[in-house]
Image 1 (spheres, rainbow, N blue to C red):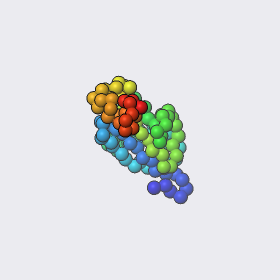
Image 2: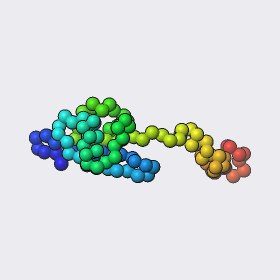
Image 3: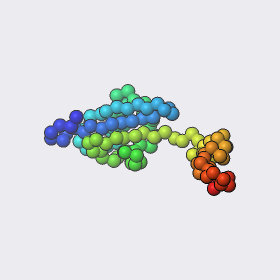
Image 4: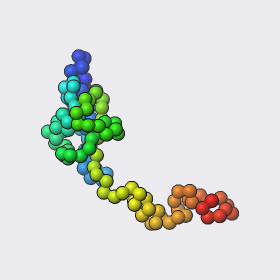
Length: 114
């Protein structure tokens, strides 16, 4: 919780350690703290923080020397294991052309794909 003089920042640190598994901690840091300071504090608090993983504040990738503000949410990102384009093609092939996207709802009497 922030002090009245603004000397303490309340930050949320979120790390995705595996698909569907999140670790989230609320940290209290001194004013002027950076993303690197928050990651170090998170590791000291017991979170598994990868050393070289990219980090972002509210979904925007930032450098480790970015100065934080009260209420920021720091997110540590994992590397993609599958190319999203390949995953979409595989999903489309599994579900079939008529069960996905624009082809899921066909007009009565309409041609396939319209």
